[in-house]
Image (cartoon, rainbow, N blue to C red; front, side):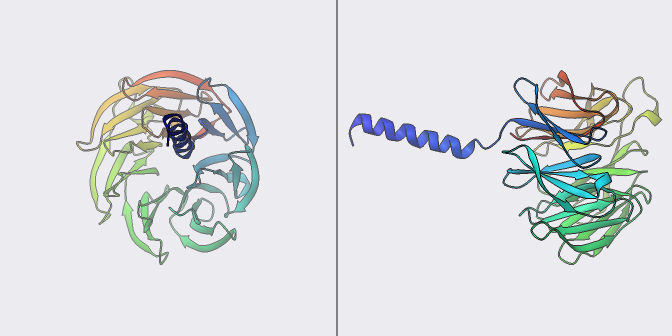
Length: 325
């Protein structure tokens, strides 16, 4: 093969490799509870690309494993809407039970695990058939739902019972009920599943559970300057992919706490918008996106400098941010 041909072949191979790796659109999706829509932002210009109508009160969102679809809870419509990323429109919906709050997807994308607040259940839905596989009775007002990295356990919070339910995904049986601080909300996990972190909104704390035994290993309290204890209402939580840093939104305290996972020490507090609620990291954990429920915007935080780079207006009462990078 002569030199020009080798050069062309190398360029073609490089372009093919790049195409195979570059799957993300760069879109940032934000669900807006009071607009019944998902706002799509361009991550370079931060302009609105599109506003996608959904069922009433869209809340939690997750990308499918192949990142071709975005699943969106529509709480008041009792369903999950499925958005095609290429078309940026809802293509179909999956009924999931009464007043769904949060959910998770199995690693293979075949099953949905959904908290149904009014039913006091976690429903297990087959994605292909859109039919329930199981309905698991839990405490009143379940909210947070999170699968372990190996998919063998699903964790659910009960806001009224102040409890975390640990469920076997093979048998749909509850393995443990763990009492935590008041009004537990959402989860984050270390990448190996060794620790499960759960926020408690009215308890003002994060509880750290052992991923193997479900025993409580530690609790973490938050004391941002200038705020009373009852203003500190942790809800959202995101864990970096290396498992070294956790970011906890403090609700009415309008801050995000930056926590060293190994030492459990709060390293910093970052001032964001009003009622900091949802927290999501981009793929390399260089940016943290915070949904501010009462200022109708998202704060984009540089995780290295721990400074807000910008605030971007979105729909009314933003709930969840998903980044397709």
